[in-house]
Length: 194
Image (cartoon, helix red, strand yellow):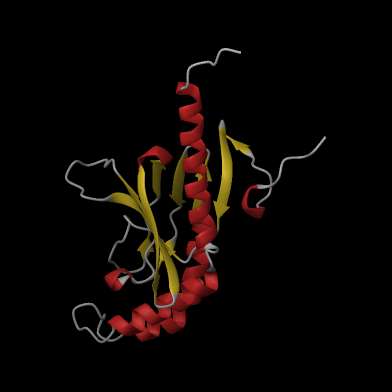
């Protein structure tokens, strides 16, 4: 008997709360730390956003530690029918202009306070676009949805900086979307006479 192949070189899917895990993405601490340092130092030149030029100090003192905390707090999971981002609360340092903030839509500006706990789930059939861009040499993935929790939102989605293997995660989402469409189309086909 032939065993099933793992999906995208990941371990065989596990079942969690009646959902099948297809891909568990992880945060790249080194890339996220580098992004935070560059982002903070860049925006320190703007008086409104710069925390009186203290951002370079924050970057040098806090970026590695905060990247570690954020990587431990954030879970990004592709299930068989949706994508889920779960961010546990963690103590974040000054997030002027969003430097080092948790994934969108949670991007709070403040001083050394616990980040809010956040869960966002987007069903695969509502995902309209998955794009990857580079910001300060760190990959950012944006997953856009057709359906908004709030009617006034133009875009409802997930925006995450610093995922490992971003392209593999994007490909896994697109492949799972195709599989679900093919399965749905197969169910709709009438039985053939044999």
